[in-house]
Structures are given as C-alpha cells and as structure tokens.
Length: 430
Image (cartoon, rainbow, N blue to C red; front, top):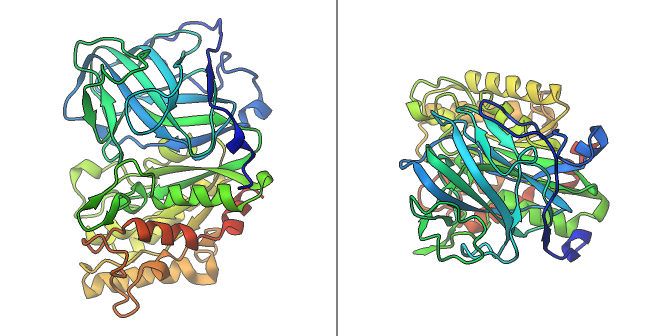
C-alpha cells in the first residue's frame, strides 16, 4: 500500500474551546471559531470520509436515550468533525452530550477511550427542525478503512431522522436510559437498528488528500445487494458497496500524493428527474437536483461526483428527454461549483418494456457521445458494459444478479469498482 496514513495509531484526545454556546434555531457552520485554524487553507484540509444521506423519519421516535452510530472511514486524518441533521424533524432536537471513539465496527463496544464532541465549545446543542449542525474539531487520529462510533444523547422526545439502509448494525440504549455516550462497553445499548440515525457525515482533517469523490444516485449507489454473499448468505457491516471497494483501490493503487476520500450519497428509490409520473410520495423532493446542496455540495473537499441515476426514472414513467434534462441541470450546477462529473449509462433491468429499453439506450447515447455526455460531463463510467448479460444484454449478468434483476451482489459491486479508471477520477483535482 502507498497509504502513509495506514501507519497512524488510533488515539483520542479532547479538544478545548472557549466559543459561545449553540442555541435553538441555529445552523452551525463548519467554519466556526472553535474548529481550529481558520481561513481557506485550513478549510481545504477537511474532507468528508463518510456520509449517509438522510431521507425520512424512523418509525419510532427517541426519548431520553443514546444512539451509537458506526461510521466506516474511507480515509483517516489527524482530527475529525461530525454533522448531525434534523432535516426531516418536526421539532427541535436536543443533543445534551456527544462522543466519538474508535470502533471495531462489529459491536457497540468501543475500541478506545471516547472523546467529547462539542458544538461551538458547548457539550449541548439544539438542532432546529429542518436544520443541521457541524461539531467542533475533535483531535482523534484515524486511519483509512477504520471505524469510529459516534454516540449522541438525545434529551427529551425527538423524531429520529434517518438513512434507512445502513447495511450494518447500529445501536440504541432504551428510552429513558439517558446519557450513555461515555460508556466503553456495549451493555447499555440493548436495541439494534439497521439504519443510521441523526449522524449524516464525518469529515477528517488530512492535508495530504487531493479531494473527495462522492458516489451519487439511487439504490444502486446506496448499496442494495452489497451484503449478498451468495444463496442464503448475508454479511452486514462488510463495507462492500462499489464505493467502498473503490476507496480501497484508491488507497492501494494510487500514490501518497494522489489520495482521495470517497463518500456515498445514495438514497434508495430516488430518481434523477423530478416528478416522474409514477413516483411514490415518499421520494418526492429527493430527486438529484433537489438534494444536491444538502447531500453533495455541503460535503467537504468535493472534487468529483460519480453519477449513477436513471434506473428508477424509467420504471416510474420518465422518458429519456426528462432524464437528460435533469442530467444537464445537475451537471451544470456541479460544474458551477467547480466539481467534475463522471456518469454511467442506465444499467439493465429485465422489467423494462421494449419502449423503456429504447429510452434507456437513448440516455446511453447521450452519455457516451464524445465520452463526455455530449460535452456536459467530464467522463463516462460504463457500468452498463460491466453488468450486462452478454447473451441477454437488457438483463444483468447472472453472476452478479442478486435475484431481483436490478441490484448486484458483492462480486458485482467489486466488478464496478474495478472498472473505474483511477487516473480519470483522480483528474477531478486537476
């Protein structure tokens, strides 16, 4: 491996701050005075090493209890900071204590002493309904492919904003159990969920990284199928989404001075275009352009987006024209922010009608033209070529199919990651 940071020792230390308290109705910036050195050069050293896009509420609310969420970091650094979201909450969320600590990724037990997480110097923060906060810098040294546990104590009653499919186990203490954020052991965390609550991003401070690559799309990005290791075999917490596999390739194959973080911003069921006729109510307002600011542009150090959208659009009634229009609008917004875009054609789905396949191929013609989406993107990731059955090209290769004809198993996830040109995506920092 070329990764210098792989030799870092996992350790934790508390940060000190004398900043003003954080109150209700405030969205705290990552650029607060308590985040260490200020200015553009200091901010440029921050990169989002893990993300989990919120898109709704948990069925059961939280009440005077703690949550412990596991984050698998694509890169490490000398410090970190955490984003807590109440985007889908209907009332303020009060967090009266928070910690972060090394984790094995396999249980609620911590693998090192927990470090206190503060918000503008205070241990307590109120996140307004519809808002978010970033924590202060925490002096916790982490490594690439390491896990951290973020523990939050929720005071009173609150809606739990969540990302539904974590593809791993996360942990809750029982209602009424109060602040268990400093617990090293797992005993207090008696409840488990397979979603991610409240925590939506972890940044690392690492001056050696060139940028952050964000995988952006629907369930084919989110990771459906990535726990499928064969018939009757499921591996929760294996970190085998194609974006995870890509992060490992970057660490192993690129030199130290060309390293990137990778963040996943997939949300199952969503579409690129807004208001496709057959779209369900629960995904309206979650199209590629609508959530771009929150789920991509607000992340740290983003230089490139790996765009994998369109599979659901066709299934819910959007034609090629509407899909391509949404592509153009999203790509332009990313380019305006100085971010490069790498795009895959829509991959096979055996449930598509003949007309839908004609539309699919029209989208593919647009994406592949001049290998830059007809001069609207910066490169093509031809996942259609990787996944299609050579005998039935409108279907997924059986070796990769989870059985639903849409999503791919662990082998398929790895095949997608292996197909990506590292020099191409690394050029996002040029």
